[in-house]
Amino acid sequence: MKKIYDKNELNFALIWIGIYIVLLSIGDSISNMIGVEKLVTAPICIILTLILYLWINHNGLKRKYGLCPLEATAKQYLYFIPLILLVSTNLWWGFRMNLTVIESILYVISMLCVGFLEEIIFRGFLFKAMCQTHIKQAIIISSVTFGFGHIVNLLNGREVMATLLQICYAIAIGFVFTIIFYKGKSLWPCIIAHSIFNSLSAFTNSEPKWRGPANAIILCLISLSYAIYIINKTKDEKILINK
Image 1: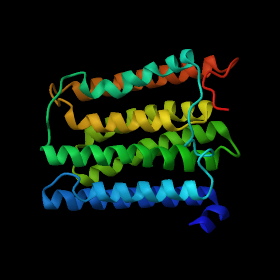
Image 2: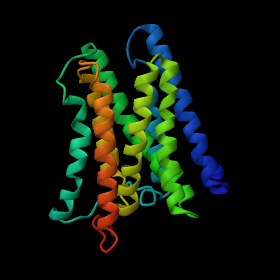
Image 3: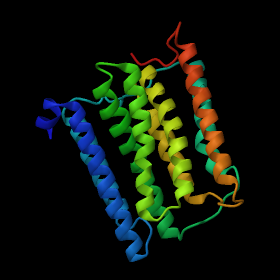
């Protein structure tokens, strides 16, 4: 794996995107066939998470990929308040147990790992590989690729409209997460927010029917406003500090 990485970091990132999408799609398909949500997906996510974390740690790449503490003053931590709004949107319309207890546990485990995996692969590997030559292009491609990666949900039986809405707000969230990582150098705020957001989706109230479009619009507005705010504030000062 290190040889592929040393030869071409971009190819390494693309390979991992492919591995991630294929394995999780297979895991979800088999889980659905068995009739237990995330039964196969959860172990796959855990294994992939361990492989990536141990590999990054073994090769001394934790700082490069943001797996380092965020050093900031109490005041600077206030800049993360919009993340709380983002992660809480799945509960704005109420709380409901959509799965059995066992399935809910498996789902949350999977989503905690997915938050780590997607941030490392898209914000870490892909963004870092591309930003060496063109930062703006890297930010855009990383965000759009992350969003369109969710189109694979169609293969797992998700509705077309719900998937399109997810792609839209995933691009917006991917954009703000990339900005946070780029400015702050630590990926942990993005990993934590992403993991919580995904996990809470197991308990969201799917009614009323207009909730999906409303959520997508709100998520896009919050994400884009947040990203623009960070960009404007960091023109003159670095608000997210990691020495």
